[in-house]
Amino acid sequence: MKKHLLFGWLSATVLLAGCTQKPATHPTDEPFRSVYHHSPVANWMNDPNGMFYDEANGVWHLYYQHNPFGTTWGPMHWGHATSTDLLTWEEHPIVLYPDSIGTIFSGSAVIDKNNTAGFGENAIVAIFTQSERIGQHQSIAYSTDGGYTFTKYEGNPVLMGDIADFRDPKVTWDGDHWLMTLACQQEIRFYGSPNLKEWTYLSSFGKDLGAHGGVWECPELMKINDKYVLLVSINPGGPFGGSATQYFIGDWDGKVFTPAPQGEGREGASNWLDYGKDNYSTFTFHNSPDGRLVAMGWMSNWQYAEVVPTVTFRSQNTIARDLFLFTDDEGEFRLGSVPSPESLALRGEETKYLPDAGIVELTLDGKQDALITLSNDKGEKVVMNLDVHRRTFSMDRTASGDCSFSHDFAARTVAPLFVKRDTYKILLFIDHCSIEAFDAEGAWSMTNLVFPSEPYNHLEVQGGEAKIYQIEN
Ligand code: FRU
Image (cartoon, rainbow, N blue to C red; front, side, top):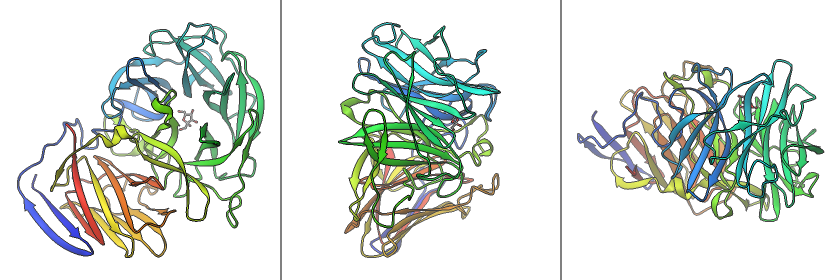
């Protein structure tokens, strides 16, 4: 295919080059298969589950909500993949199958270094929801081979549900005991345990706080510096419709989460982890190296996840991101996310061509608006806009390609810039069906799927300049 490139140079729009040489592309089995994002080899995937890092072997383990019988949601299992670089993934056999207690919904995994559960030192213990027609319960399973096979505990379930939506346990070590964060309708409940088998109710959080447009799911409580951040996915009720991940910053006293007061005029306002439509059920990897908070989310939205135009599989996860806290220009704490160093290691040679999968680094002048357009020869385009007066960055995918499969897909998403800068550096991670935009310093991120009928091969920048990088082979 003929590739050429439109390239802008500090507020001017300039046509740079038309080239006939085809740059190297990665093999794919279908046009929308991501090359550096995790996707299931076949069939359906939703939330990432049980992610942990095995430091002895340098292996990242990722389990995921999986229906092995088709490309839409169905009886849930835990699929399994591993990676040594967070970019290339090896698929392994399913680790958890439905049983008489129920199908296997979302959950987490921990390395039980001190053998608190009695399954063996360093056993990997998975804690997950089992869902049946009339209820949801929490169960556990253990692995003594480093996470490749699991045995279900004979005393399951370890925590019986008392309401309809009672799910997605994320377990962490809280000083001298295990702490479970659980989504219960539109609240979060906290439970404590000495051994992962017996759980005691501690407290509930969330009534009348944050967004309540839908059910709360996939929570996680994490410590950052001397603060605590509670991630809560919500569906529907996201800022651009459907699924999204909100967060709360506050204090944790071992039993109760107390949100910090928000600044004037912001009382009760919702905070969003990402300002696109396609970043849901974000969790961090247990035991991430160097005390980092390495996170990944499901890169889709329940509004249309089951009808997107992939053929043999559905859904992929975001790139790995490191989470951190920063202070915005109003003096408010915010949760930021930057591409993890492992994701940045993807950046290969600089190129003039816009590859099907690559990274674009934008340098935009903070004094004037900028317009960035990715397009193809069919006239399909994604238009991004830095608005320095409104202090926003937006991405419009209404003409990005196939939007016909769902009336909820065509959208323009908008992120507040949070921090004023003289020059805005923005990173675009482009893969076959996704664009992830990041403020390079992590003040905001925006994750959106796109389904162009052929890859975007033009880049036009007004109000700044761009460098294009191939991905490492
Ligand atoms: C979120 C979710 C979870 C649930 C799982 C079921 O996407 O609804 O709450 O555990 O998916 O597949």
